[in-house]
Image 1 (cartoon, rainbow, N blue to C red):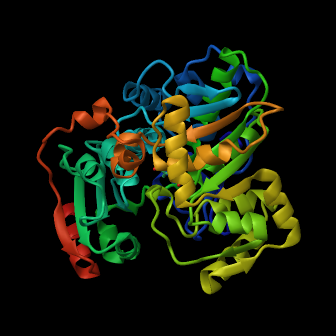
Image 2 (spheres, helix red, strand yellow):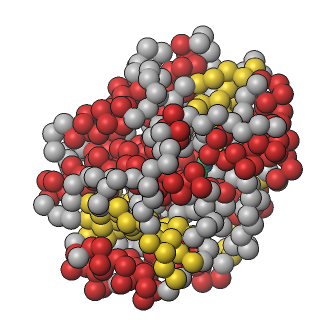
Image 3 (tube, protein in one colour):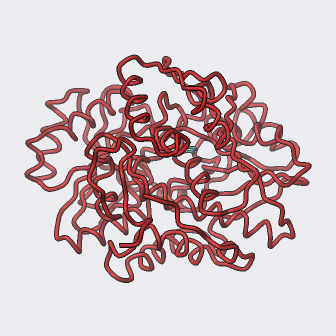
Length: 466
Ligand SMILES: *Cc1c(COP(=O)(O)O)cnc(C)c1O
């Protein structure tokens, strides 16, 4: 096995795993997150101006996979990924004004950036299961985007079942229909009479339920899965490649709209692998635990606030653990101690040395709702560009970043038509939906409504997984 293709847990007490094991497990058995034992290094030809997305993804991901999947698995996965996106750039870079760019990550099957990693994770999971002969049941809670991307990716994948719990009547009609109109017997949508936290609680209970083990592996599809992280690294290369093609060879600053810190950590991984950048800024909404940790040195849980950038309404960003592990010089004892204190007390003070190291990796800025709305308006007025609330959070931070030493790239994570309710009142019209949303039309929906109750959830899952 190549070096980078071996995975250790951030908490240091799990056996070393290969890519397939990390992929199918999601979380490490000691409660930590999988990390490659070292970072593969890329050379500048990896992001040369004329490279196709599939080539960049191939170069980035091959060392992470090693020999853990059947021959050709990555190529087949990438063919499927690319086929679902708008060619040729896959993730086009759009210049807004001098030195300021948007990297558009929403031209895939569900019009949000999670498609990029999820499509690949699904194809690679099917390959791993075909090789091992196992079956996998995935359970996930969603407030919208994750569920839609997961359904689109895992529908009709052999040996895999997918169960998605969404809060009944609390996801947007577009997001619900993206999940419920799929024609696939391996997908079960449960609409829970409750909120997103109820859905998450039920998923936790299901994943811990011993009686379900008889049906094969159980896991989740959230962004702690290493395969999803790895699948997000290539678009950072794509941004640098497209900048060079447009004559801009100075390294960019990336500004990333952040919830669970998966997208942002992929950017940090890209720079560890050698991609030239001038830094990374995590832009968060009013759910600002990450920004307070980086800026004030205290990582503390607070009550959730509802915002228009709903996919970033995250209290304790799960991938912060990967950042702490990396910034501490891969100190698993420190990481385990810190996150078990946080789980117990809801609050930890970061040691000075760690804090300094974290600040070398990332800076973080919180953006309020009024600023987000103002940014949606400004982007439309100045550039004729309609952006979703998540993208607006990043863009408002990006506009404040110094451009004298090089370009600034904000990541655009969802198509604005998915968030018409928030965008239309600001710009004065409903954004035109992309073809993938129009195509849903009036297809029939399939979902089952259940109470926010562990017994009901277990019964529904048993019926389905049997
Ligand atoms: C999930 C999501 C984010 C946040 O990404 P993380 O990896 O959780 O930080 C941002 N924008 C949109 C549209 C999303 O769906």
